[in-house]
Image (cartoon, rainbow over all chains, first blue to last red; front, side):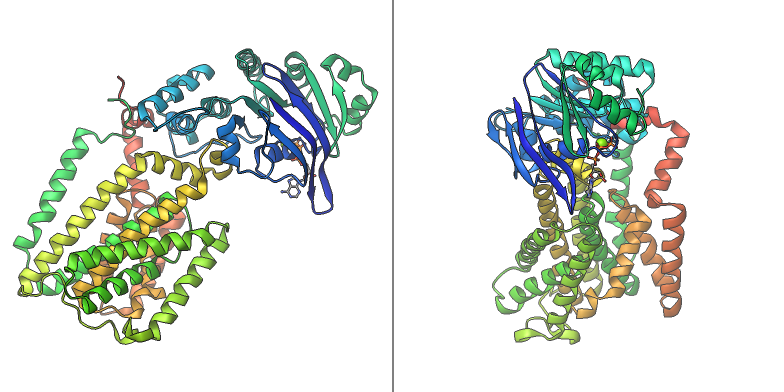
Length: 245
Length: 335
Ligand SMILES: Nc1ncnc2c1ncn2[C@@H]1O[C@H](COP(=O)(O)OP(=O)(O)OP(=O)(O)O)[C@@H](O)[C@H]1O
Ligand SMILES: [Mg+2]
């Protein structure tokens, strides 16, 4: 569904991403781990178009998209969340979801406001935010903001969902709920790529894990293999833990 | 029933109706030509401010070229009034609006490639270039700093009182129509997309919105209304000088917007009315005009960042409780 080949991103002399390749299929979760500054977010940025990859190829549902605009990739079925929870703060929760739904994949012909609002509402229900439809996004606590970001991503009816640290800053109970949510999204047939420091969640959710270090991929395999891999252990312990386990 | 965000409550409709009725009968009971002239000029400034607020406040683009766009509306409609006297004056003003709208769209393309301070620098330079060209009066098109030649105007046959009254009503009509248009646009698909791009550009693009397309549309609409204001000013004052697009009116207009509340529908109304009154009171103390202007701006920016509309909104919310208010104002009607 999504295939990345040899993605490289240079910032000046710095190789933020150095020749990373992966692919992810519908209904699969690919985990991405790595210490701070490993290039995980930058990899997402190249895939979504927030920055243009210096080299490499990106195929979304078979179509090459490197060099195309962010909104174009979204309409093809690529959605992402951001590491720092972000939404249109002065819009209400429902307005945020409605706007995303109005650009959902495969929406044909003229825009219909009632249909788009209904699609936005349905996305809010999937994450459990329907009760806060009228609240301005700025007033949401962090867990709700993170759920809103996932809801607006779902509202675009994505084929591929990129999640950048969906568990960061959440309580244990919220982490469990979010794991359940991501599992349901996967079961609906979406291909998911999930950056995460919370190893417990990554091990439980991911079918495969790709570990990055200094921009390069140092490991690809199952979560169980990852926990036994000497280099991964060294990178994580050597880098001072690289985040909460 | 579905599909309306921020529907206007019956109470607010009643307030709007009363305000419109009061505004409509006002010139029937008030005739002072000196103050009526100031009021009509204030109305035209208000139209300009509504247009600027759309691109500055709602679209969130720091465009400082708006007064040049306004001037181009005056010059282009004036050109038609002078050299093609067969064209009715309202059509000439409309032409000025269209001309300004097109120029504003053209200005949008280079502007939207830039970010932050560079947006302001480019649009400001654009305004400076237009003003410089206009001062040099190419082919007699602008009248330079002496002012545009006398034009027929909308009501050449009316006496002073009736003339002022007629212009007052025309401008009031344009103001009311633009307020409704802006209120409607704000909740339209375009308006929601514009506000989302303003709040979180990278996020909004990742949800399928083409930020540049939305903002180009905002430049076009905003430029159109600014051009209408320019044409109205020229036809009302029978003159338009290059100082109309200078730094002084620009800072006055920005202050009006910030004081009223950027990005809101009623902000320009409140800011323009308040500062017009203050500036008129201080007209014999030109030194104080600028001092008071600067001091007011400072106080608002530091203590009331949302402007007066934001302040009222906060007090209002504190009284009613924000949850209840947001629920009845922002939720679409079920059904
Ligand atoms: N716009 C930019 N310009 C220059 N360097 C950048 C830019 N964005 C990121 N970098 C650098 O690229 C490297 C990778 O950063 P990135 O944010 O992708 O890491 P990450 O793996 O997501 O880290 P974290 O776990 O802290 O989120 C870092 O060294 C960072 O400083
Ligand atoms: Mg990151």
